[in-house]
Length: 460
Image (cartoon, rainbow, N blue to C red; front, side):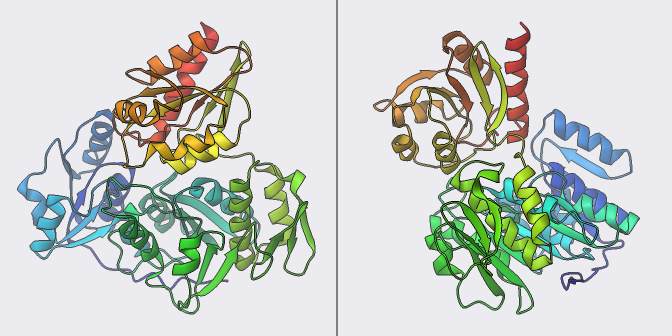
């Protein structure tokens, strides 16, 4: 059985621990630290209904919480665990470091108490699909995988449950964002997976090179016994992930060598030239999903999953919620929820997935991308773009010479406009190309709201 050399069981009993940020990961870190005997103080400068609910839950077990501001009490902590939404350049983080306080990410903190190996997946696009594929491929009699991190359950909550229940043959399958990697020190995956690197989060990073560096930090603690799985078709990864200590394994839809699985015009074959699966049997369409499937298959092979299990999941897996998710058809108009598309490369993938007339819903909190970059993907099939939220003016200015536009205030207005203006055969596609944080706490909430609005139209 593959082992985990990540664990070092740091004793935080009676240690003053400050949790900054009360999202899902902040709540998980607070619960884990409390279980381990720390004196926990949680602080979040913002305030909304979700934060209030989490605050009430923590206070009910004796954890002190403040919301709506950061008081000086945060600096009483000897250890800070910060949520991924808190920037490394935040004034309070800089002040904590100047006072000599140790600042770590929630992923780092949870990994201290992990008994089993970690598979961590990062990339600008495709992370959620890939971790779900890996999780299903590894779900066999021999292994007991669990999915978390940036998707699903916070890693701290997973570790807390495992400390209590002590499962066997666990594998941690984590989706990891660049934000979660900003304050790692000993975090060490058994397998690090890099899907792609394209411009993203340029509102948080000063340059593309800084963003790339944040992603590549995931391998800093790996050694010769560990593995890196990366996309040979990505020029940045191909350049950066060479001559490193861990064992490296490429995957590719273009290259025919140096990979565990090869793709030809009709099939995926193993490196022994044995057919794995016919391309027509794949349940997820598109080159991007073929690449994601190859990444998942490569990871699964390294873990010891047999080919028949890999093929089974490739042929049965139907996708993840909020990623090109078919919602329903209303009067001949098809509605798709792609709320997970928080950057422009994801919007390009979504547009390339359809041939017919598209009413495209874009907007939210701008992440610094260049909206002009999506124009080549319109290909006379985008009838109109409906922009909403904080970025609606910027999107409209960038694209006004390329496509018809309509500006509205919010997602509800956007869906109502589409209902009144779409005709049979049209596709209404929510693929925002922006973060959700101007009007929603996360992309999931935005996607749920879109589906709710569509279903309201259907039942009206």
